[in-house]
Image (cartoon, rainbow over all chains, first blue to last red; front, side):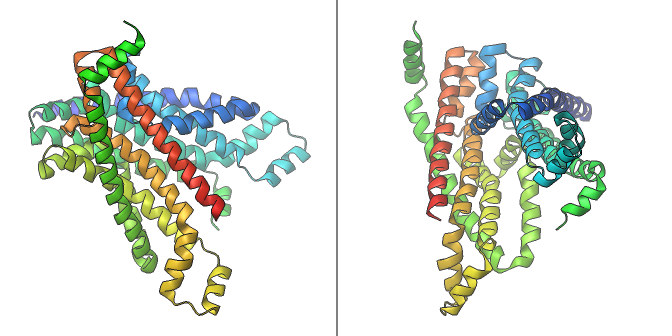
Length: 207
Length: 210
């Protein structure tokens, strides 16, 4: 196993994980905002999200093949199918569960619904939104290995090569970096959350 | 060839009845192991709270590890097959069960404990006759999360020669046979959603009884 190969595979893995996560975020946030205006859409999304959460990731990855074939793009779709709904759900619930009294005082000083969402609901939902994106990132990292079976490349393909002839070195070379990345995601998101969450709110939440 | 024919052909050729039994066997074994360890750990850290933070930090880290990575790392130790698959399931499922057991036990209100103390129950009786029954809906919630994790990991078992419904999915992908992929993929998806639904129903009933 040449170290350069592991480096390349790690790059591929990161592009796959973060690419899919990025697209998921771009689609999710507007959908969560639309859900704020449409209760039925919101209920539909949450029910669907809970249902889809129960389906094994391997089945999701497999089902993508008849739809899109194999390769990098189908892999992105498979990861997105898993990560979209947790982000939408957390963002929506976070915005929706803002303290009633805060929203009422905002209404009282005459803010419009959109202003309340932008200035009150979104900042107050930061912790929930971050939790959703972090969860999605960890899921994406996990599924990005699995998608190697449908030809996405990355660290997963080293693992599958190792599996096919039970080569322990290859198995470890493929899997250990993904564990490192998982822990890095966990730590970096926790740090980012602390930095980006408005500090007054942070103090208030500490009860 | 109609859709129903396609299903029956795949079902026969891929031995989906046997695969489903294998799948549910691994699922059952993992859930049993995870419940025993998870609930015991939950009660243990409830009694010795100083270990709670350390244990939860450790379990939280294990939770972020990609499932397939953990599964393949266990292969050199446990060999191929059902054993590493079940052990991986248990490692992932301990956190939700332990966390919910611990949270359930600590969620009991002071008044309830006060009443129990005043009628002269010992600390042990309070734990098992008051706290545990009150914590039951939360424990059931933890078991339901564990159920979803376990279904996911058991399906991956197909990749490490453990059998189960992951095996026909892998065959389908390797042969690029869309029928096999669709039938076995949808079947395992349906099983997972159905089991989760049953668990949700039981959780709901426990909540009402409380």
